[in-house]
Amino acid sequence: MPMDELTIHDRSTWWRRLFVAPLVDQLTRGISPRQISWAIAVGAVLGVFPVMGTTTVLCLFVGWIFHLNQPLLQMSKVLVYPVHLSMILVFIHVGDRLYGVAPISYSLRELLNRFWIDPLQFGIDFGVRALHGVSAWILIAPFAVLIIQWITLPILNRFSLVISKSKEAAN
Image 1 (spheres, rainbow, N blue to C red):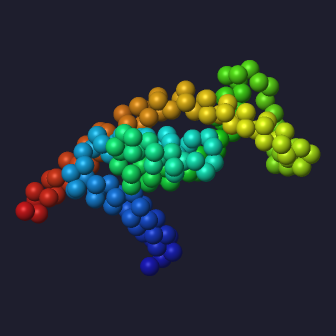
Image 2 (spheres, rainbow, N blue to C red; image 1 turned 30 degrees about the vertical axis):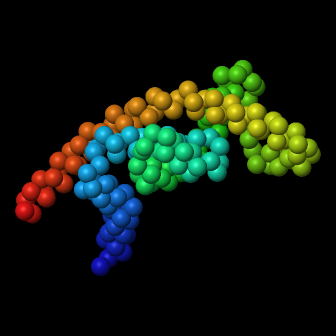
């Protein structure tokens, strides 16, 4: 098998194993497309919460409160991880604008210099900046959940229909 075909096949297998198979499993267990779309939407939005190291616990807690599907929540959170990393500074900048705070440089060299000069002040300054990012996330999150749910529900409804037709054809 040529290398290009092998690479395409490996990607397809990876995608099916980590995303498609869990969705099919949940749909065949009787979980509605609506419940799945809510879990995906909430998981994706919680997955970009702008504080590193908090998204897993946040998904567990919110999923428990709203009785959302934990495997799908966690899967969605993991899938948006690259977006999470890039959105942290975006949320902080938006939060800084909300609070009228002058933007600062986030270059690694400057951050390390500020940390070594005064670690306590560094923690205070960037703790406040993190709160600004959380404030921006809180304003955007409800709309993002609704948009993602609105996009995923018709796709999942169609997917569920295909699964039910294939079950009928097999019987």
